[in-house]
Image 1 (tube, rainbow, N blue to C red):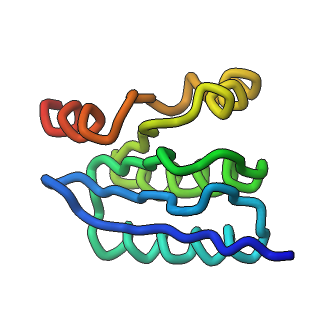
Image 2: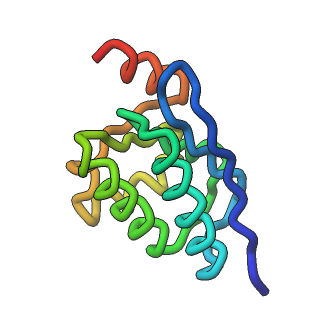
Image 3: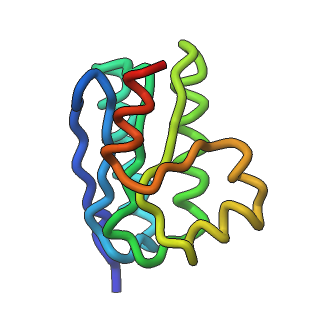
Length: 120
């Protein structure tokens, strides 16, 4: 059974925000579709910082890590950066195990990520 990967993209105080709205992100096609939508959003808005808000996410497949790295590379082309907010501690372990905790910045909530991006 496929799980739709719902996202919401928006610009908030000069920062791009991608809020994952699905508790479980495992559907291969859904993740690929989300990646396309995020790439289009980045192309149109060129945010200097893009925040991925994981507040509602309880589980994700490794393909989501690929999505994050792909988008990070797209932003790196113009010195943009990707940060992650509100990730569940259990999910944060995946980033530590894969050493991706050294690649992405992490914030406890969306508000602190936005504030940090706007003070740089």
